[in-house]
Length: 251
Image (cartoon, rainbow, N blue to C red; front, side, top):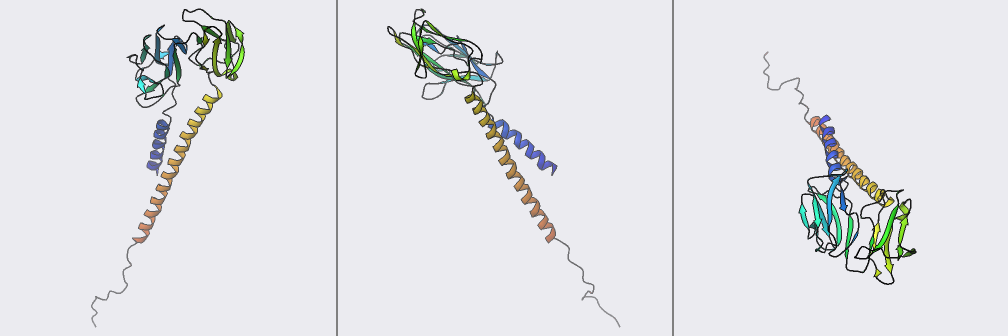
């Protein structure tokens, strides 16, 4: 019985490790911390980090709607990915380990438009201030209209989001009468309800799988135990007759 309990515990640990493959403390670091870039203007460095330190055994992955590739068309050195200014690297990036663990995703856009929106690529901390600017390729800030989820936020040289909250999470872009509109990018807030809900669901799935496996193994152990008892009861020794018919009797 102790061996069966140990087996159940070991199986539970294995299920937890396998099922939690998508939950990781490793994150993707982006330098500079921006989502939008002009084509041919600058290079971008991506790396896989844990608590600010680069980690080994992780690879930067990228997709632009097609197959997943390592670091796109950029140079890969360990877990560091350098996106060259001459390459087209628009797409979604994340870190992935050899065992299949994945970090959160980051979207990067390379634009040929007249303006881009300077917006953080990484999730911002709640309570911090975020400044959004509409810029030309020369680096000059352009007075523009700022939008969030299709709603006009105002016309100004820059848009400041003070004391960021989860309600500020959404799709932002800017537009200028002279230079047109920028690509759209999503501003993420750390510990947002969507991210928290996703992690809760992952842990619930892990727990449910563990419970199902445990119940199945318990039922198997119980059925084997009852089967052994039946076999033992059927193998009771035969009673020896009090009178042996083969015994000779002498008068």
